[in-house]
Image (cartoon, rainbow, N blue to C red; front, side):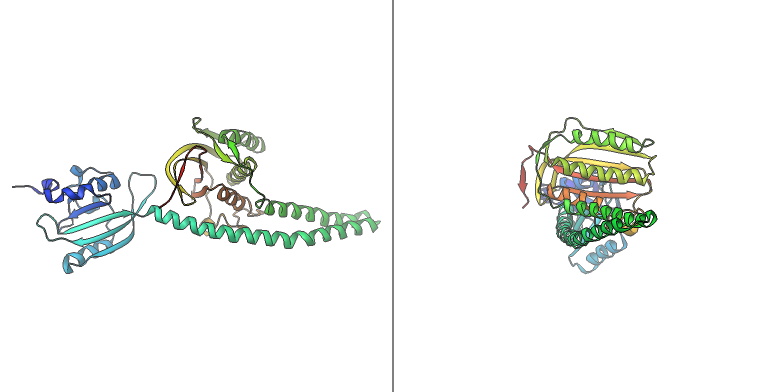
Length: 360
């Protein structure tokens, strides 16, 4: 007689071993009677360990999921649950769709088929970001042009007025007008700089990071900047000035977030099998800029890359918007994760010699 723990060797299940999607079979007590190799890989658990154990060994059985499983057992109907989040030993949670079907075999009563949807979620997020970026660029361009032209007239009028005034104290006021007009003109130039054509060339990312690190350390002498580089990284194809501006904007924000006396870590790594701009790349460069500051406020975390959004008093809200735009032009991605004590900006860029494949 075969024990429950031996059900995985049943010939009837042999075909399930060949499936790419993860399959788990449950008995009426919602205990695991079989899982195929794809499920072992997905949940990072061996078949021997999970057989006979409750489903909660693999994932958090929420009340909604439990209700769906009970309904399938009672009514013998099939269901599909969308976007189930699985927390495991991985750095990030895994998002899954789960199809639940009743079975009419002695060994098991339910068949659960799991399909990772992280790729679909990332693609949808990239499409939303691309649309938002186009809108942001148009907003910035129109706003800059509307402000730039009147500023020239205001500054010229203030200069002429100052030349006509004999009282030095009154001239101070016209000088204030000219200084503020110059400051706004410089801001407008920054807003329009993202529309300049790229000039890509082979670049070693560390040749960009080191001068910026030295600059930031000179600007914030009490700041600690740690380097965790993978010096074997190949070159990327990029616009040097734009990438310098990206790293400088993020690092300066991080330094200001820790009030100039915290810690920033620069980390470079290889990422494998990553999708960027709807293209699958076998290899890509990952740059992480991590600080131990208070974190990004919840109110603006989802809008931190939008123009004119800033958590800092006196901030323009353009630094991260420009960084996002430049990385988007490089066919890369930029993301942020932030909790109190740790904020991490992750930039991912295609490597120069990594051949992209069109995403199916």
